[in-house]
Image 1 (cartoon, rainbow, N blue to C red):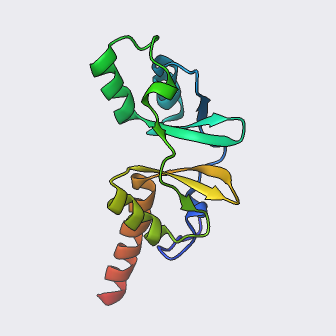
Image 2: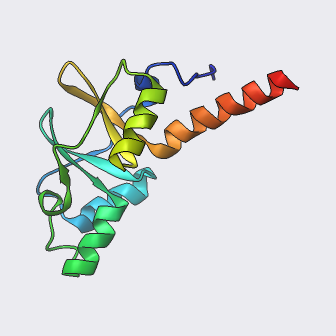
Image 3: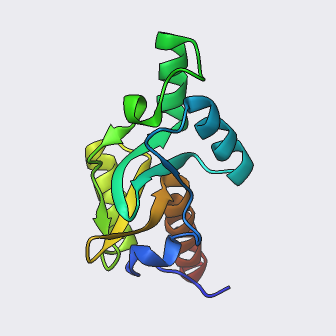
Length: 139
């Protein structure tokens, strides 16, 4: 696996294929998809259009407020028009945006198309690896 640096474009961290669901998916279906794919959030899509993002936290909040996972839809709990980053932006810039906006999952876009969603864990892995490489070069 090639070394990825914080200055590299965020698109390098996008997993393919992207994990997504439709607006009419229930939170029960969303939770099952998140568990199956081992991700923390899914993109909510209408065709090629990003409608929003649903995270594990959104599902927990919906369960606490509504209780019935078969009766609550992605459209009810998603973060609509989520803050996003361009695929050519650096990983470091994406990390700063995540901090500034208080988000743990960030859609990555290119020319109006969704490339995927990156997590704070994805970004943190690159930053800690870079720190370790830097630390070892100093000793």
